Image 1 (tube, rainbow, N blue to C red):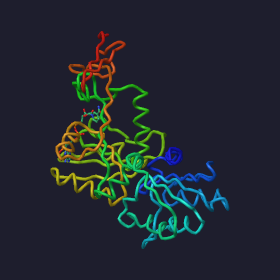
Image 2 (image 1 turned 180 degrees about the vertical axis):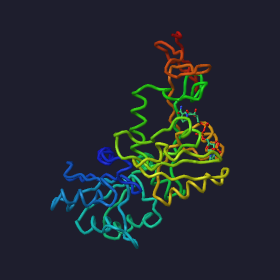
Image 3 (image 1 turned 135 degrees about the horizontal axis):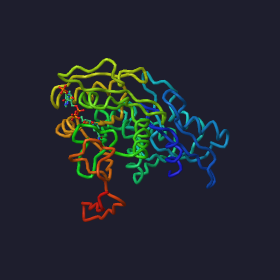
Image 4 (image 1 turned 120 degrees about the vertical axis):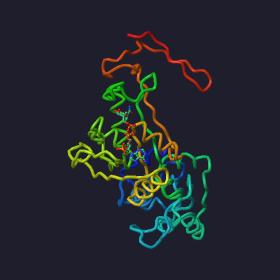
Length: 322
Ligand SMILES: NC(=O)c1ccc[n+]([C@@H]2O[C@H](COP(=O)([O-])OP(=O)(O)OC[C@H]3O[C@@H](n4cnc5c(N)ncnc54)[C@H](OP(=O)(O)O)[C@@H]3O)[C@@H](O)[C@H]2O)c1
């Protein structure tokens, strides 16, 4: 099963979205005979890919799957994998999780069992299966995306300098990581304040596919020439009112197939999402700078060779200011 997850992770979540990433490993006589993964939305599923590679050796093999194989349902684009596995004489199937899609939800397992295949649910892998496809599980179970708060803060807890500049709070390595993160999600959201202060492009800067860009507009007019409105990726603008408005935005985005949403700020938008209880995960970059009272983040005082101590749930970051 570990191998099935490695194979599944060769695809980025955004490659298969809104479908899940799935890995399949076929084992016979204690040896791996074939592997397959769902590589892109609309492409072959993991199981037929592995079956294609296993050829006639598939008969009598055990298939390890990161998620239950799909069952037939109306509007489905590809043949049902549960039926295909049964037709090819697979003896046993071990799944890390059931499919949370209500159109499948156990029906794939039922097809396998009816065909006389032994099916095991590997419950010790279920949490890992949900982590692999956060967006898909969130869309299927809650009808809204998995929402990640991302921020870059100075050591004294500022998202920008005293003059409102946040370019740059963090250094090039942290920013490259943000670009990789953007390439993994389906959409990025910022507030009007960030568009007006920073004019961000909100693209993956070559790290992968550019996600959908989402701007929350308010009373202030947004410049038509803002980089977020360029042709690098589509952009949608919403004007939500309160927590109910934010929930409606998430519903709208889920209808567009957005399974994972990165909320990049600024602080007003972060506060609104937190107040509404809509943040599922947080990624906080901490820079060794002290931005209170500084006009330019690039020349702000910073700690030299800081040390990090852990005190229960808290951290002490200690260093000489240079
Ligand atoms: N360090 C970082 O990671 C980071 C990231 C992003 C931004 N920043 C910095 O943060 C500052 C901008 O942040 P900010 O807090 O002023 O603005 P913001 O959070 O980017 O945007 C807030 C604005 O969005 C509009 N809005 C529309 N619907 C909203 C809703 N439901 N909830 C909240 N806002 C909604 C409102 O615009 P109206 O006022 O027009 O009504 C509101 O004032 C800048 O200094 C920027 O450099 C830092």
